[in-house]
Amino acid sequence: MICVSLLLIYLSSHKGQIFVYCSKSFLYNKNAGSTMTNQHPKDPLHGVTLETLLTELVEHYGWEELGSMIRIQCFLSDPSIKSSLKFLRTTPWARKKVEDLYLHFKSEQK
Image 1 (cartoon, rainbow, N blue to C red):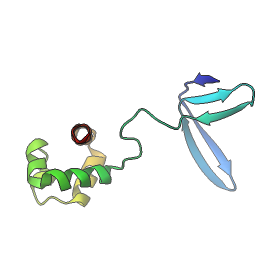
Image 2: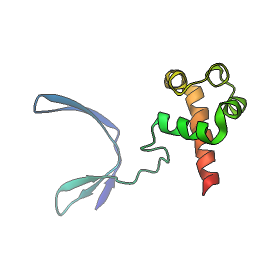
Image 3: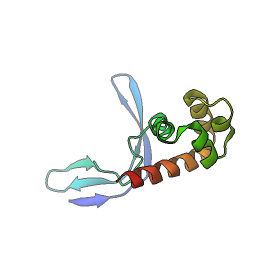
């Protein structure tokens, strides 16, 4: 098997639906002539939604402590999951801080 890394974006059509694919690493089996996508990505946030990680952080730390750790207004003034998600989805630097805190929180749980 050969591991191939590509960054390729392409469109595909199947039964009237259009799909956009962004390919990543895949394995190519020369004997079978088929490919298998990489099943275990190295990204620890893979498969974890922003809502899930935010909910876990709020359950563990609470809004007050979360607001003191990451000083953003949506955690300090009338906080809610919905308003925080709206802000974090449009503000990359704040989302990065929340994701980093989540990774730290998960590493301490182990």
